[in-house]
Length: 339
Length: 278
Image (cartoon, rainbow over all chains, first blue to last red; front, side):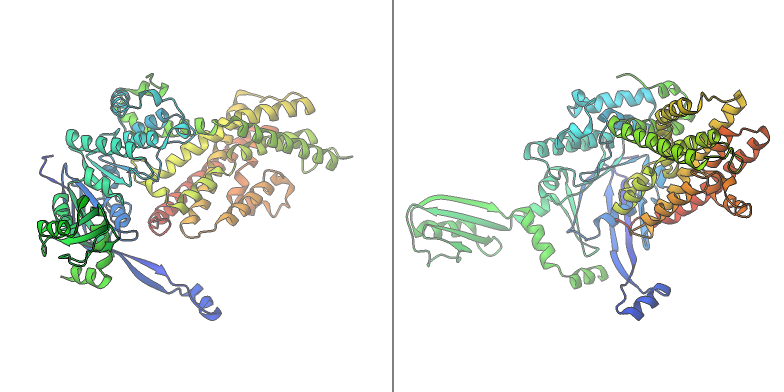
């Protein structure tokens, strides 16, 4: 496969579920036993996107946005109501078994390891499941456990591993059959900062060195910034944003927060921009750089009194995305889809 | 890192698809035996059942040489063997699969390159076979102490008994597998297991089929319950070469029939994965 070939192609993908409606009143309930009423719920609406081989993509959205449904369609577990999905050249529904040999999955909240047994048992089983030749399989276990710093822990029952060690084993298990595409769902959930960094570095390295396409869903924007180079935002089942992480950061940079601390209480009534929060000797000002220049704001703050400390920060990516979720209504997303 | 015995297939790529089911079975067995105290508790419960019911039968036989063609010694050994099969399989298949379906965990298993029904069969029948050893030892010791030494009368007897036990385990697995699939449609499905357990206990485990009225027996034999524990227990205590073929063929027919049904129900149920736990 050439590196420019698409790993995932999705065109006008929709998935509608039929959900039985709860009847009210005894007669309606009895009638619904014979002839139940259903309503349609659109989990995914007319979604289209492509992911290049070797790309690292974040697939973001609030709970219930349609992320899991899309992933289940891409892994062949669900059949779309309409539209086309192609993963590594396979139709996920028709070629589910063949596709499963070349994709991997790692879910932070769903373990693939046998809880009471040493991790080596699960690694052996998974290698067998993916039909890796035994000698090659042993070599890969050695390679992965060494790279992931797990060599001494192979014979420790999974229940005795720390969460960080367990997640590293989960990742090693997902990579044993050398998948070309790895679906990651909240891979760092519950981990401390140090272990999160380790996991992100390992994923980044695997993506870079082995050209494995990463398809990440996470609510942790730290994961997204460190692992991914592009983000898709899905909301109410509709794709509302497709941007590079760099572009998102630039977007976040349009809104800056200036925090100032004065040496003594000051009068801030003459500032160019009124503070969002204010105290006797401090203020927080939110600046839209398209309307106001930062030097102008800083000069106005300095003119108000003796500055003890001042910081200027971009809007956190998390806030930017939360703003997009909050301000994009169901009607807007549907209008976007219709557009 | 040492290889496993199954790794001797290295170089025979055509055997690799089989290796996954062998390893699925052996991994499930190691997991089952990780808590030996749990296994010991099960063996104790089995011993208690054998003790209580063999005493009950002794009371029922007071003053009688035979009941429905069985003497006390035969009936006690019958119970030891039939319970051995039932205890070995337990209800783990139903409990684990139902839970996996209800929580949506099954979706993650379905995404792997294996047959879910075969993988479940390998795991559960391997576990049952591994548990059968201690149950059989305890049952044999209790029976031999109380009733006198027992062993198969011939190599054919031993072979027929082994085959019949294996088929009974597979049948029990298929029954539980099918019942657990109801979780795709019903959130609460334990009533199905309860009914199944009672039917299995009454028809052929606690009571041999000869105890039922003659007109009932054909009806029982039209259900899988006449072919679960009855054939191996009957072969153990009243081995007749003429019966071997009929009993084994009956079991095999039910295994094949239920296997086809299980595949169809599983295929229909797995299309609902997204509804349950999606």
